Length: 316
Ligand SMILES: [Fe+2]
Ligand SMILES: [Fe+2]
Image (cartoon, rainbow, N blue to C red):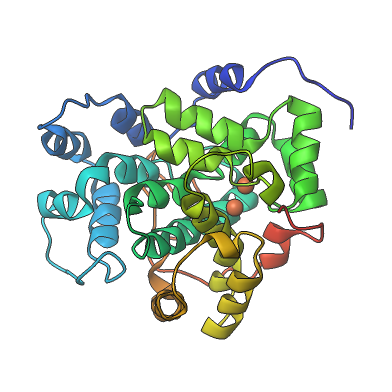
């Protein structure tokens, strides 16, 4: 593939704006003022008149994966249950369908939602690690890839067909073509839109090898949780059981950096398997039709694990 490195991720972000690749409601959530103390009021105001996104928010906030199941929350109470990270979570849900990436886009969004839930559940057992930032990081870690699918569908689709979405060979191909990888573009988006900076940092490292991460100072548990969630998401959606998922977790190169006790790991995976049918949201309806190609409501197990993961070598 010939190199076409002419721009950086910031230039691609401008192209995303020009190409109108973001759902309308996502643009409104991102543009909403963020003053402390009134953020829930502002989110409520932005969401009014967006019944499908409200349904998503109520569904996420009311699932037992967050805490106690709730069927009758008001939007206000649902946002309160989502806590300090409500804006990031709402923005991530509103971005469902960004890039309009066709079948690959749908696979990637499903994979991302499962990644978000796994990362969030693991973070609950990590003292000092924010569940919201890991949730948002999981939900949006492939956003750059989805946007590249929208901007350059032919080239990006061909790369995905050749390498899958989780291989280090995909990253090499992206850098050869664009000069940056999709994680970098995802992180650039989060920073530009004032979404949680820690989530952006984690996303930027979601394809880094253990050797590459060794140079990072500080706590490796969050990036380990994101990378492991990324690796478990598609098997989880494809029907893998607790033992299989735990085997993959333990054998993951970042497994030793997770520092979640075995009993907690098993409990997390058991909960995820039990609720696997609730992991995928219907997503907002950005343009008055089902522009993202999503069937409303419910979750179908993803039968395309091989397409997401590809036949190439693992990324880390
Ligand atoms: Fe990725
Ligand atoms: Fe991923």
